[in-house]
Length: 207
Length: 357
Ligand SMILES: Nc1ncnc2c1ncn2[C@@H]1O[C@H](COP(=O)(O)OP(=O)(O)OP(=O)(O)O)[C@@H](O)[C@H]1O
Ligand SMILES: [Mg+2]
Image (cartoon, rainbow over all chains, first blue to last red; front, side):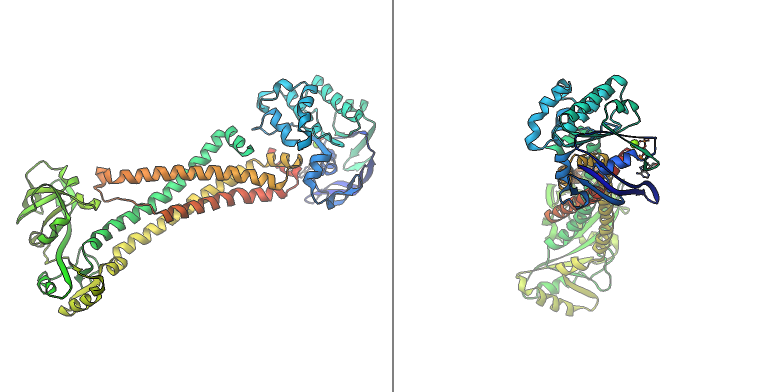
């Protein structure tokens, strides 16, 4: 489903990923672990098409990412993202933030998802009017709204307390049970309990 | 409409951009229209009452020119000449006013100054422009150590003339020690103007005879005002436009994170640019209109500000207003869309990270 083939990445002259090749099967819950600076975020950005690798190819469902003509539509339909910081748009309400990401045929899902994530009553507030945990749930809702085949999450609980972290893990686990592939990069070893597969990075290499 | 939401939520920022565009556009309008206005008034004064102007040869300034007034008799006899009059234009302290315009003219030109009270002046009398008259309650005034009786007050279509005095040309000649500054001749028919110019030129080798059209076109004073106002308004214009462009590009740069998020959510480059386009257009067009209204208001007030004695006047032509509109929009778009275009080509995750840096 996701196939990395000889991926290397440089920031300027500094190499941070070294010739990585691996596959992630459909419906897995992958935990990408490693020390700070080991390259987790970089690899996750590349896997999620948000960053072009300096070398190597990425395949998703057999398609070569670097050759996809309309990457926008591909991103909108196939993948969802959750970042360490919520990255909601400050001038749009909770509802509008989710609607911005939603494709036309998925707009009807918005209210259902808001209810599932227990943020329905917040739908007309702006991001600066809700708590950090609530924001992260909105970000999760936004990632789920198009029912993507793959969800990428970079430190999704980095700014949350353990209660809110648990909520987010459960949400991700539920998505995986529904058939979605989930890839999470994190320091938090608790995720190992949810993962079906663990990828360990050290200094840009897979152990 | 997402563009409107962005503007509304960032109201303070939007207001600042709005104001900086407004000020830039107003500076452009006011500087260029005031200088155009001054030139316009003076050329109107010369053009309205004559087709031909006679000045001293080699003296390019009407203030210093000296022409023999007796030429008028000969000119009257030329075929197709309608009328001719002589004028002395000077400036001098009047009473406690440090400097005011003095217009000495032959009586056949008095009607140019519309009496609002009293009578036209005879020898040793003057009439005061309405603006100047407000400064005096006496019956007599002192001009260059000579006493003149005030015989009346006048109005004029040409703003700054209302800040001066009108007297007989003989009196002005005594004050400024000359016969006439210039003579203006009007023709019975437009086709005959060149013919008349040629005939007058033969009378005397000390004079320069030109159509008023040409005179105004070539007049040095105008050229100086025109050139310097062109330079100043060009600078104001350039600075205003650079300001608009740099404010817009700063705004766009400060929103890289937002564009990165949108790109990550699968929004196209076109979507981002389109919304930014609307935001920019909305802001710059409304700021432009606001500046236009303010400028027109200020220009309408100028002639009524006593301190300026009617010397400063401004007109705004439709063509220059449109020209400013076009350049404002172009600069706003260049400023906004170029960085947006560059940003939209960057990998989304790098945008997001740049945004939080
Ligand atoms: N935009 C960038 N420009 C230059 N170097 C970068 C950039 N982003 C990351 N790096 C470097 O690349 C290496 C890997 O960074 P990355 O963010 O992928 O690590 P990480 O495993 O996610 O770390 P953390 O756990 O702290 O988030 C680090 O050495 C980092 O300094
Ligand atoms: Mg990281």
